[in-house]
Image (cartoon, rainbow, N blue to C red; front, side, top):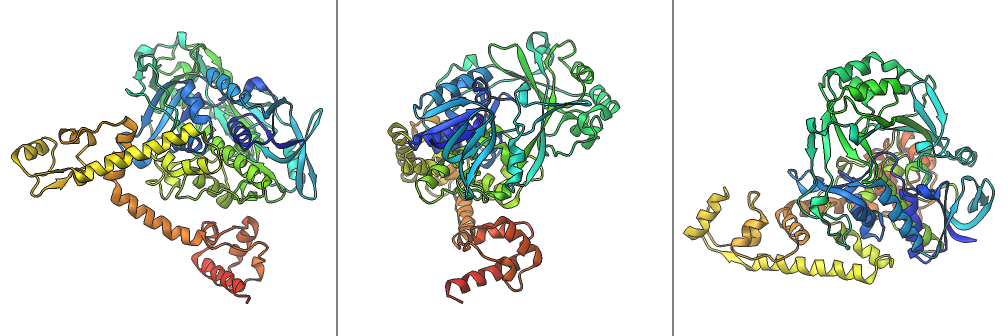
Amino acid sequence: MYDIIVVGGGHAGCEAAIIAAKFKKKVCLITSNINNIADLPCNPSIGGSAKGVVVREVDALGGVIGKIADQSQIQMKKLNIKKGPAVQAYRAQIDKDLYQKNMLKELKKHSNITLVEGMAEDLIIENAQIKGIKTEQEEYCARAVILTTGTYLKADILIGNTRKRSGPGSEKPSLYLSDNLAKLGFDIIRLKTGTPPRVDKNTVNFAVTDEEKGADACLNFSNFKQNEYDLNKQVSCYLTYTNPQTHEIIRNNINKSSMYGGLQDIASVGPRYCPSIEDKIMRFYDKERHQLFLEPVSLKSPKVYIQGLSTSFPIEIQEQIVHSIKGLEKCRIITYAYAIEYDAINPQQLKQNLETKLIKNLFMAGQINGTSGYEEAAGQGIMAGINACLNLDKKKAFVLKRNEAYIGVLIDDLVTKGVIDPYRLLTSRAEYRLLLRNDNADQRLSHYGEKYGLLCKKEIEIFKQKLKKLKKWEQKLKETYISPNIENNEYLQKLNSTKLKDRISLYDLLKRSEIKLEALQKWLKIDAEIEIKEKLEVQVKYEGYIKKAEKDAQKMLKLEKIKIPEGIDYYKIQNLANEAKQKLSEIKPTTLGQANRISGVNPSDIAILSVYIKGKRNGK
């Protein structure tokens, strides 16, 4: 008997298991291959736009993806540095082998986690409550179960006109679990995603490609443990492009792609925001070239990943495509590209705490919920793990709001709107993205990590010291004034800034768009870490915009505070539109705010529902 069983050892499963162990629960992590824990089957990187912020959010809550990524990175950079802080994020090139090794080591640190090799085939349920799972050989009992099965449910590998039942990288797929979930009433959807070829780096002509170096400063996903590394040992990536010859090969052979006629029984939907090379060429016909990044898979492996060349063409066509690309004319393909088709569930059948609506104490996280990406999986995994523990302890669910975290946006989108293709987190999905920045993940979420006992004393102290330093330098900027003398005005003119007419605080001077924090060193020696300086500059420079965003968020929170009683029969509410009745009955929103975000529910429906709820409270 376990407290919690986690099914699947990917990024969602690892986070769920480790966070449950921190809650002092007895955990069993069941995975088909222990040596494949925390695999990176799609691409060897962590982070990216919005995704990198999620990694820092998971870390602030006590998760591990950020720390493991820091330990395993071979190149790190900050994206969108020429744009505003709302869209900046870290991205790390990862040593795939080292990442898996470090994650397995982290799991084994926790004596209350038992690792079991097996394939979950069915659930043990009594009175609509989970009691455990069945594998091929054994039954395992638990008070809660978290399914994090990734892309393994009835998975098929697709190459050209061939279909092979297999998980990623020829791993064993789960053959029966999704069918048994369907028997319980779960709505099963079919999705697909793709991978690109991997080539031998010793056969690539890097000299004709563009070198992409990492950042010139040590960057860290983790908010607490600063990983100092030798910048000179950062491994470069390289940029090349498709060309008219590449496009001609693809167009001439398009019917041989699994997705474009090679297979007639494709019912799944691929990722809209990470399309295959076939999709790019066919959908963007007028584009002369597409970017391709050559990224190392591991320091000890000759494999180079061609990011941007995901495809399901036959092997012989893949050879032609790859060899048409500058720098890859004579390269050797080690691993051919493939698409993978798999089962997932309709995430609208989940509550906001990621517990299923059909079965008590059964939770789901990761790609089984229709998402794509390691980071989205990790964010769901930690939330499912926390909420499974809170459920067992009979405590209130932990739900992050849309103005608190990208994780909140992600989960709310899933359970409220559902998916029609593999969901990818984007900055544009967050209406309060200026509040959800890369630099302030710890300020937004560390108090939750402390509240639930998921951060150690050292991490809490590091966070509190940061806040103390930030407040100190903010106060110094407010207290330090400069006068409109000749020397100061000449200095400001050199910075292309307006002359002073009156004395001004450095705090207000920093609000000028052309003035950087480093420029203030002339008047105030700001002796602080790079991270503190970054936080300080963003906080001051964008103060007005941040306050406006916070004010807008408060309007949304008013609706979030209005709880919808359980068991409402929406079909009995007069004047509610039929579509609204149907959608509200299916999704069962918990707050008026969530109801307001459901497609097909209009403002007039919300007004009617609000009056109805007030009437219920008053006993009418």
